[in-house]
Length: 484
Image (cartoon, rainbow, N blue to C red):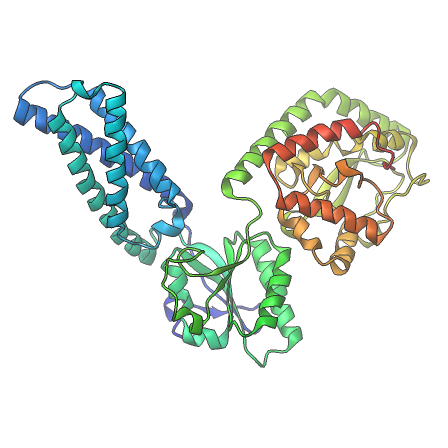
């Protein structure tokens, strides 16, 4: 397979791994908004142009511009709602560079009927020129067809020239399939580019294959990877299963491309994943809109909390300082979103500040807990400095509680689905905590029950669920007997 056009060189990360340079001059995610804006301008221009031409050349009379602007707005809203409902503004569809003349014509016909119906019901049709309105519907269709045809040509040229952003992916591919399918060209035509390509064949030892997957996870964590694409012989079920299991550790979508045998019987554009006919091995935990909503909620509560609680935080800091020797704040490395390490902040509640392998979980009546610390832990006031972790983006208000790195490594080996809890940011409070799984986890079964609740949260997230957890947290703080 000729990949020279992408200047692939051997990456120093190990055998079987190749890297592509890439650039991100323009975010392709914004393409749908741009296309929608141009659709509105095209429809508005058609409405005003038709009105000016018909009133000026045929009727030779003045016009009321605002009425034709209103018709344009109504028509655009109808058009955008229907096209949006059909996925026509999604990057996946737009990047296929298809001239959807039939779809545009059918949707516009519906728009004409709906708009005429609204004009009739609103009894405003008599104040408009039927000739100008008819000309608008005709020119509107022609203008939209011409614009969409130009868009299809432009996306092809923009993708090839780099004027339109290519979203970076990690490609995992068997060498046999790479010889059959031009994967780089397939990805490029839909706005994707492989940042790194990991390859294997039938002779690849199991330990090397496992190491290859570990490096793929590391690359995904270290860089802003859009998704992971797998190209494998579908008869290699054991390999695909290993890939799916290993990639649970990263919260990005994972797609399985059809192998060369299956691809012969598929038409591009009829299935999932940007017209590539790919199967979804792992979905993204939250969409872009959901992440934005959650982040806005986090920033609002964290900033408000830090300001409102600043007198209390100051008093607690003094109490910790005078109660026992040591720092006011306790810092410890925890694993966060996608398993990335970060430094969590808490008020110090113990006479020690253990981290890493030296960390020992606090137990009930632990002699290391100070007098002030016991009250802080009981009331969860010791967790309040984590509002700063939320504000900086390492944590969320609601999410699975982050575990110490030692426990994280231990339980990831012992509990199969453990890695899924890293598909969202860790939280100050979580579904497990408000359901009784707060504090010490002295047995494997206790941790398994906590993880079950964490995974429920990941799979059922909603803004209302976050609000419910926050409200329930306030209720259980004073009555929870599990705090140590």
